[in-house]
Amino acid sequence: MNRRQFLKQSLNAAAGAALLHFRPLAAETSGDIRYPIGIFTRPWANFELETAFSSIAEAGFQYVGLMTTRSREGLVISIRTPKKKAQRISRLAQDHGLKVVAIYGGDFNAEISRRAAVDGLKKLLDNVAACNGYTLILGGTGDAQILDNYYAAVSDCCDHAVALELKMVLKPHGGLNATGTQCRELIQRINHPAFRLWYDPGNIYYYSDGALDPVQDAQHVNGIVTGICVKDYLHPKEVMVTPGEGLVNFPGVLQSLHEGGFDQGPLVIECLQDGDLPHLVTAARKARIAVSEWVKSIS
Image (cartoon, helix red, strand yellow):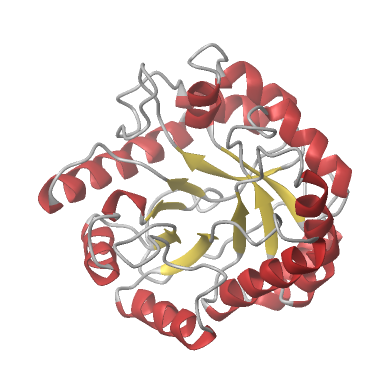
């Protein structure tokens, strides 16, 4: 799918769905193309980005999400990343046979002012476009004093996202967007198809101290989910867990989201059990196979 096709589909979709179709890469010959499976760079936060890309490709992935890496600020992409560097990162991913599908770029100066937040968020969107990505993931804010600036900037930048043929998505991330219900309220506040939700079942457990089951919480996000951060959870407060080895009932979460309208979109693994490079490759491959099996269970 090219960016123009993506934009046309997003604008023509029902406001409650606005789902993103992905065309598989030429190398991808198996799996359910409705749910392309990728992995974030976060498990390789202690390694250089090229090492992360090499390991991810070795584990059999074609889709990658950019999050953390070994660098001065810890993020692959942020508001401080020059455009040319973002373009180089895109080429580096392509050199490893990887397509960037999502980017988490951190905060964007909402604590300063609405104007600063708009400028910062536009810079993040520009960098996602420079990386040839599709989706900018936002973590929201837990600070009520900057809530208005934060979401005013999101609203102000929706047209910029559309012009770049991108989507912005919120994820459950604690604070004022810790649950599906809270996320829905914030997305409805913006009321624009360029701003939707990537569900994160591990964070639902994490920020509720294990009290809120994501299978139940997922019932509150019908029609607004366009992707999933595949993250597991173990007590007490641990998310560096290889998916399938923790408490999250992933088949149940996927089934609940599917019944609520999530019938296609990327599933991007966010965390693995920590370890050395050979361990991470093995864990990533294991997680990819597990997610593929969970997708098959959707009815």
